[in-house]
Length: 340
Image 1 (cartoon, rainbow, N blue to C red):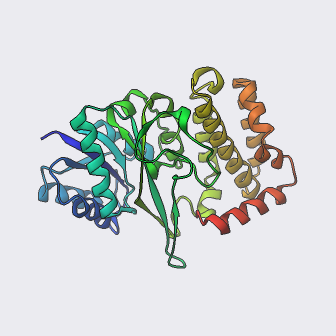
Image 2 (image 1 turned 60 degrees about the horizontal axis):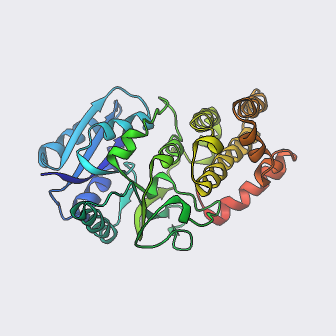
Image 3 (image 1 turned 60 degrees about the vertical axis):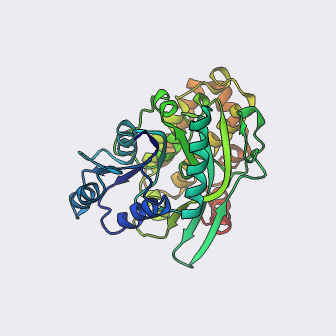
C-alpha cells in the first residue's frame, strides 16, 4: 500500500525513551497501514537501541522499518530516514519527543485529502509544544496570526514571525520529493543541524498549508540534551559550522524569489548569528572570539548585502556591545520562552 507519510526517528542510545515516541505514532494513527515509521539506529553501542529497533520492525513489518548505520550524527540519521522513506510526506520526530494523537489524526486526514485530490502541497506546518520537565509546564508555539489557516498558500502570503516563533524542525512535514530535491548536505557529527533542515529546503517549497493543531511535543529537561545551556556552550563550534552551512546555501537576495521569504530567511540567519555570538561570549574556549570574528569575515566575503543585513539588525548591533549585554538579553528570553 502506498504510504501517506513516513515518520523518521533518528536514534542514538535512545533505548530509555524511544518506545514512547514510536508508540505515540502507532497509537495516534490507529496503526494505519498508510503510515510508515523508519527507525534509524545511528551506530548506538551503549544500550539496546539496535535490538529495540529490530524488535519493533519484527512486530510491525508492514509499518516499521529499522535501518542501522555507522554513527554519523543527527543530520546524517535524519537524511538516512528520508532516503528510506516510502511515504508521500516525511516528518522527523526525535526519539525523546512524541506526537499528540488527535493532532496526528487531523494531519493524516489533511494529507490524505491532498493525495486524493491530486493537490501538490510541498510543506505542511503544524504547531509544537515545549514540555518542560523541570517545572512540569508547557509552552505552545502556534502560527495562527502569521499564516493563513486551513488553505494552500505561498510564501508571498506569510506574515511577520517573532523571534520565538520561527518554523523549527518540529513544525515541518515536507512533501518527500520536495525535500529530496533540496539535496540537503548535512554535516556529519554535528549538532543543531535541525536549523539547516528548517532553512535550506524552503525555496523549493512553492505551496504551503498551515494546520492549526498542536502536533509535536518537544521534551525539554534532560541534562545531556543538546539545547541544555552547558552542553550548547561546550559545542559552540557546532553552531559555527551550522551557521556557515546556512550562510553558503544561498545568496538570499539573488537566489530567493519571494521577498517575504527573503526577509524570513535573513531574520532566521540573524538569530543563528545571535546564538553564535552569545555562546561565543559564554564559552571558555580561548579562541572563541577569534572564531566569531572569522565567522563575520566569512559572511562579508560571501555576500556583503547579507552581511550588512545581519550586522545592522538589532541582534547584530547588540553583538557590538559588551558581552554582558548580549548574555543578559539571552537570559531574559530564556526565562520567557523556556527554550532550554
